[in-house]
Length: 140
Image 1: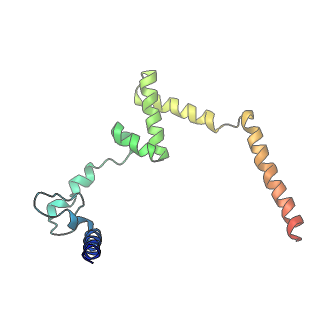
Image 2: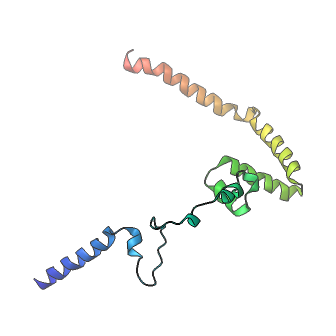
Image 3: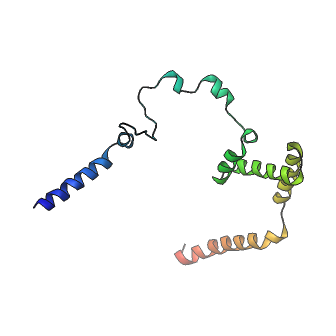
């Protein structure tokens, strides 16, 4: 009987601990919360107009670490900027020359290449076969 009661108390104490808000679990002496609190905001905690004006708005003004993180998240513009910076290091060129080289690379990649023709032919034949087979299967 006492073992069952102990197990019940232990389960209640564990579950009540995890039912608390996340910030409340870290409160106490010597425990800093990793979560931002929404209490007692002062005007100094909000961004000022100067902070907003100093914010970097374009990819070319960001540092390398931030840019790499954003590019790894799948942002195409950040990936292009990383490639431009890589061109700068490999070709030992300034930013404007790297942008010109990047534009050439982009133009070549946009052009139609005969090596990609079989892929487009396969996709086109798949779409054609689907449109032909659907009326046959469903008696339309």
